[in-house]
Length: 299
Ligand code: UTP
Image (cartoon, rainbow, N blue to C red; front, side, top):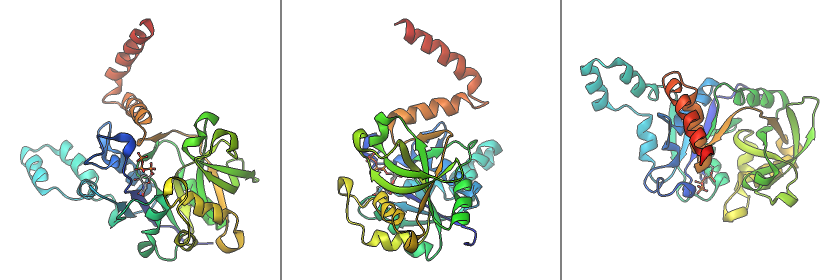
């Protein structure tokens, strides 16, 4: 049994090369999804799950990320003078949300390397990792469930999503065994971005983790893997096989809505889906979308 987890680590130091040139001078985590940067959705999710101590791993172009969660005195004063309280509220939404901390990754040597940068801040306690470009729809529960499982099983927890076999090569894939809970599996192996033919399953690892601090020692000796990067998947693979030493790894199967905003097509789908469901935009957007799609099918 462990105490309640309070720390979230959000890696946001990747180069975002799939989104160039938009990400040339701006982190991909700052791309707006409707009217909020992706990273704000992620921090909001952490806070909703009770994780109010947030450490962001930043890289080059970090200023935009830090500024977004900081005060903007000039803008606040202008809106206040105009009496525009609605917009002022929007500006302040991201300011007091969490206790924000930042650490630089330096060279982006992979997700495992980014997580290792959190060791000093996290110390010897379990913690959550939320990828800064991965949005989980707020109507679907995932992180809270993962935190519960960590407490119950005293093991590291990954989030798994069943994907089409044709896209498993884009993810880490998990070999799994059932447990007595249909939503939870034991992870027996992990492979980063496997070819469809050798993938151990269609269970893809998505961007939420609850990790025991033993992960840091494992990451210290994890050699660069796929793409020459230090892969978190490789460290978790070792932990999955070392139940005595690290508690092993379990997976919570997620059946809800998830948007990978680091991928162009998924990003576009996220903006359309979330905007069409909003009260302020949906009523005008939905009929336009239907007419637009009808026009496409006539061509
Ligand atoms: P991705 O693999 O999606 O990020 O990492 P990337 O390398 O920026 O993507 P592309 O392929 O070049 O477009 C998932 C998450 O891990 C972070 C990213 O910022 C993203 O939130 N990350 C990745 C780091 O913080 N550091 C790294 O070295 C790599």
